[in-house]
Amino acid sequence: MSKFIITDCGIRIPIDLYSKFGVRSIVKRKWLHFEGAREFVKSLNLKSLKEWNKYCKSGNKPRNIPSNPYISYKDEGWMGMKNWMGRDFLSFEEAREFVRKLELKSTTHWRKHWIKNKKPFYITVSPDRLYKDKGWINWGWFAFWLIFAPPIAGIYMALKVLKGGK
Image (cartoon, rainbow, N blue to C red; front, side, top):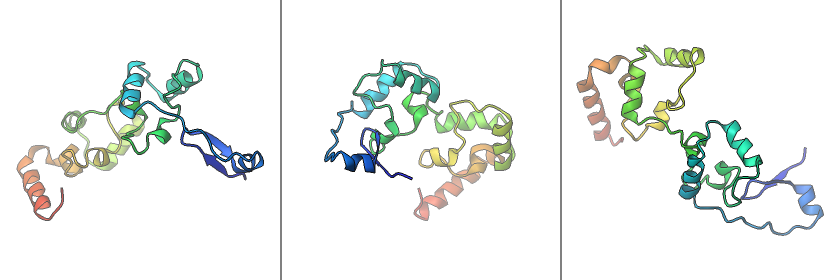
């Protein structure tokens, strides 16, 4: 199996080919800054990764926007392809309101629900990770049994802060 060198513009070059031709440096491409590139891509109103790949192959993509943004912008604010295409998730409060209306009883029900039903693009399957520092306390507070007990959640959050957590 051949090993590869991946350039900062996402091109995979086999090491043996790289060595054979004595290439010593690969030209770094100057990408548009992350925010500007993302705004441009959002304006295209693409709805899926398939549409993004088709657009990249069409010849219409500007040269200063990478085809593999997850590589080029991995250290500059990358938050996934949905975010890249302008299909952002709901805020914590909006997501919690949406999920509570589903009346799920546990994380097992949560997983089973999204297996049986098509998940809207604006809801994440991992709210505990996405909303970690944006209001997340626990699954109970987000979706299940703490719906009618916000004072308990307030106490829980206060204890968490006192113990040094966020």
